[in-house]
Every structure is written in C-alpha cells, then in structure tokens.
Image (cartoon, rainbow over all chains, first blue to last red; front, side, top):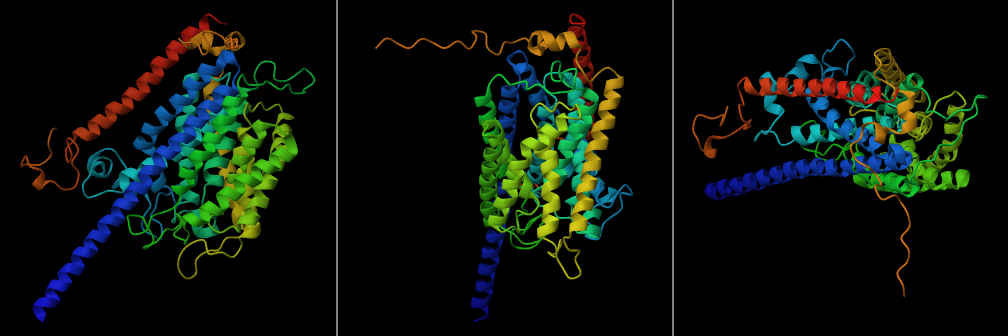
Length: 461
Length: 56
C-alpha cells in the first residue's frame, strides 16, 4: 500500500512538473508572439507615413521611421528597462510595497553588465525576462513611431532619432513606471487605471510630439499670412489607409501584451490578469476592441466621410477605451469610441488654429484621445479596485484626471525641452531650401518612383 | 569568453549560457554597443549637415 502511494505521489509530482513546464512555455510563447504582432504596427506606421508624405519626401520619411525602431530597441536594452523597474515610487528610486521596484531591484537584473547581465541574455533558468523585455521594447518603439508621423517632411534625421530615444527610452517608461507598474505611485495613491496604455503610451507620445512641434514649426506652405491653414495632401492615400489598417492589426498584439500570463514571473496567480494584477481575460479584449474599432470608424465617417479620418477613427476608437478594455461593457465601449471618432477631425482642426502643423493628426489621435479615454474611464469605472487585495485603491474620476495630467506633463515637458535643446544646437529642422527641394533629393540615395506613377495602357483584347 | 562552464558538456549547463556569462566581457560589449550607437549618430549628423550645405 505504501509503495503504491509513493508511486502515485511520484506520478502526481511528474504530472505537476509537466504542467508547470507547459505553463511556462505557454507564457513564453504568448509574449514572444506579441512581438511580431507589434512589429506589424511599425509596418503600418512605415506605410502610413510614407503615404502621408509628398512624393519628394516619401523615402526620407521611411528612413526616419526605420531608424526609430533601430535606435529605440538598444536604448530600451541599455537603460529603458532599468527605468521602468527603478522609478515606480518616484525619483527617490525606493522600493515599493510589492517589493518589485526601486534602484536596488532594477540593478539586480535590468542592466546589461555585472551580475544583472545574467537576466539580459540567454538563460536556461529564466524563460520570461527576454520575452517580457521584448514586448516592452515594442511598446517603446511604438511611442517613437507615434511621434514620427507628426514631424514628417522637415525634421532632421539624427535630431529625430535622439528624440525617439528620449521618448522610447525614458519619457513613456517613466509614465509606465508611475502609472502601470503595480508599485507605481499613481496606482498606489490615486488608483490610476490605464490597462491598455491610452495615457502612458498614447497620450505621452502624442504630447511629446506636440512639444516637438512647437519648436519645429510648420512645413513651408502650411499656413497663410492670415493664419489660415492649407491642406498638404500626402502622395498616396491608399498606402496611408492600408498602413492605418496594419497599425490596427498590430494593436491586437500590443493589447494582448498588456495582459499578464498567470503562473510566471511578475504574474498574479494562475490566471490572466492586468498588469495591476486585477482579473481579466482575452475575451474582454475581443469584445471591447472590436466594438471600439467599429464605433471609431462610424463616428469618423459621420463627421468626415474621409477614409484617412475613418481609419484614424478606428485607431482612436481603440485608444479611447484602452484604459478600461478589461471592464467596459462592449456597447459603452462602442459609444465612447463613436465619440472619439466624431471629435477627431474638429480636435485636429482646433490644433491648427494655434499654428501647429501635425502632419498626420498624431497629437489628436494619440494625445487628445488618450486623455479623453483616461478621463472617461474615471466617469464610468469609478469604484473598481485598482489593485488586488483588501484596502486597494479604487478607480475614480479624480484619480484618472490626475493620471492624465501627469502623463500630459511628462510627454509635453520632455518633448518640448529636448526639442528646444536640439533646436539651439541646430539639429532640429532642415534648411528651408532643402525642405522645398524635397528631402529624398537632398539626402536619400534612392528614388521612390524612378519610373513615375504613370498608368499603363490596357492590353489589347 | 567562450563556453561559460568548466566542463564542455550541456549536462552541466544551467542559468546564463551566453558567451562570457559571469565575467566582465558582457559588460564590455554592452559599452562598445553603446559607443557604436553614439558614434553612428555623430557621424550621421556630420553627413547630414554636409548634405544641407548644398541647400541653404
């Protein structure tokens, strides 16, 4: 009998070990697959920005976008990952209540040198750090791409890359440490809830772009002497619309990566959870993302009839409910997204009245709508616990407004100051003659359309 | 550099398995990679500035 019990215990232990390994491999695969999905966001931004540029700047805009990814990735490896884990409690770099933050904690695994290097490369005992870092790195690259579209056709390449590194490596990461990390002071003290990063990614990037645009100035010919704005159409609207659709595809991966898989490092139990540890699942995302895409498109169609704004409306729809994708009722998500689609174009036009030339509406789609979404979650989601456990802070309108204000301030201040410094160094804007000639001609050793875009005659029947 | 364990067999392997694990080389290469990024930006800016000189 004892021998049978021992054999049974051994079999249970073996099954448990296999179950744990399966769970680990699932978590590893889950995060890994979010990375190529998020790369699709960048394929989309690439097409979007090249299409939104005039033909004389198409490749230059593409080069800028490609370099943003290339430099943000190592920047996030070198210091961005450390910032996320070191700063949650504020600039004091102290440890938070969950014990997973502060300079000492970040120093133990988030640096590419010393003993911490063991967690920053291939490691047989750590199947999560690499894929988790990878997903965060793509969040970082996304912020840079958001800013990238706003500044096309007149920004210097290296100046832009430096701005991308600051935004992707520090600005949004600081916002994430404060408002996404479970030890973040915005979460612990104000109950800020921004599950899908409407504020800490989109609003931060959107207002960072605004800070840059204030220093950068409008494109030649954008504004008339009386202050009225001219529309500068891109050379390929179908490419832009397709790019926007790709961005939306990629955001399924982005939002998928906002879930924490149960049972692994930095997880909150056996099931899916938000990054705050509160319960959710992929079903919640499916309901609300799809309904918000539809609502955003319909709202923008009603307001503009323009395919550019309709596809931007789809993106704005997702952003408008991203903070509460885990808890929204789908019909409410549709209504909020419809509102976002409806106000999109008027909000962009309003910005132009201040002499801001945002070439693709990034400040509006990501910045304004990001704040809109954060605040509306405070209106509809008040009372939900923002963290696990008894006595947890709850979501509130005041908390969401505080969070939105902090994210706006981080984005705008870091974007403005860094762009101002680059401007003083002569590294921000291209000379006017170069802008008029076209940046492809000035600095890209390739042609976008060497044979033109002439239509071919139909074949004889 | 090279295999980070004393015995050249995977049977003994656990933890970090990248080249130079446990030593100073990973940190050195990290520093070199940072330097490359900075240098490329410096060179890139010089090249870009020279391109603009013909369009002032």
